[in-house]
Every structure is written in C-alpha cells, then in structure tokens.
Amino acid sequence: MHNAWYRKILMNLIGIFCFCTICWSQESALPNIEWQEGRPLTWKDFRYIKLRSGKKEIALTSVKHSVTGKMVSGSPDFEVRVLYMAQDSWTTDSTNMNLLAHEQLHFDIGELFRRRIEQKVRRLRDGGEKQKAIYRYAIKKLLSDFRNFSNEYDRDTNHGTKLPKQLKWKDKVWDELNRLHLNN
Image 1: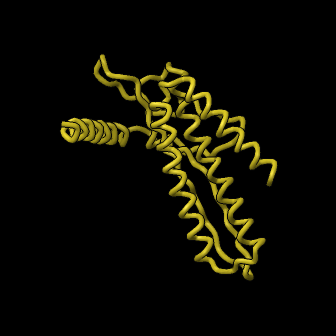
Image 2: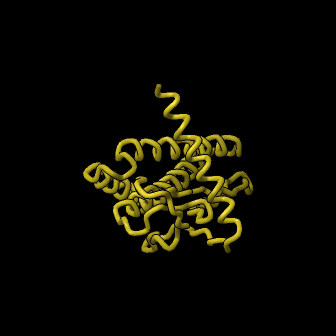
Image 3: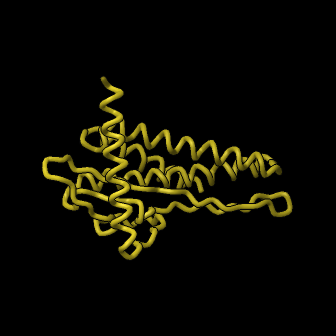
C-alpha cells in the first residue's frame, strides 16, 4: 500500500519537475547566489509555479557546494563556495514566510558545512597531511554528511511545518555557524 502511494507521489513530482523544466527553459535564467551573511533569500530568488488549488504549499531549494583545490608545495589550496541554485529552486507559495525561513535554513546549512570543510582541511594541513586523496575523501564525507543533515532537518521539522522544531534547528545551525566563525 505504501509503495503505491510513494510511487504516485514520486510520479507527480517527476511530472511537476518535467513541466517546470519545459516552462523554465523558455525564461531567462536566474543567477546563482553565493551564501553571504546579511543577504537572505527572498521569494524573488525562487521560480514560482502554480499548482492546482487544494495542494499544499511547497518549495524546493537547491544548494550546491563548489569545491576546487590542489596541493601547492605539499600544502592544500582549496576554495569552497556555497551556491543557491536559483534555476533549480522553486515555490508554489510566495507569501508564506515560515516556508521561506525553512528554505533559508537549507542555504544556511550549506554554509555550515562549508565551514566544517574548511575546518577539516585546516586540521589535516596542521597535522602535516600531504596527500590530496586524503583531503578529497574528507571533503566527500562531509558533503555526504551535509545531505544527511539536510534530510534529517526536513524530517524533524516536517519540511518546516513544525514551528517549534524549526526554531530549535535555526538555533542549532546558527550556534554552530557562530562557533565556527569564531574559530576561523
């Protein structure tokens, strides 16, 4: 029973994605946004799609990490950026500020993991690590942790609908963002 229900939901989401891709390909591309403190997302940063009435408000925020790097004289030289992928992000309700706050925290979680990656690279460097493969493995592990953390956030807050949980997650993420900022 559950498999049929999940399959139906998945097929609907795939249909929405395909429909949106076709419609969006004809519009001008929205620029990607690099995470910056003091530059929150607004609904203008999202594509708006209209669903049939009676459907729940939903949004999708696409966050990617851009990691480039090399070893220079046995020392790591990595750059990590967090990008909000506007072309892949959308909403069905551009008035729900609780939903926007939930989506913003997805972007903030991306920044949290950027800082964790930089911290790990520093620790490996300070420990004398010279092998690029070790750095690459550590970064891949943290990117996997980012995906798991984001999924846990959605599950725990029911995609932002459990407001007390949403506020706890915001505090948790920002406490760590501030801690990692001070330890830079």
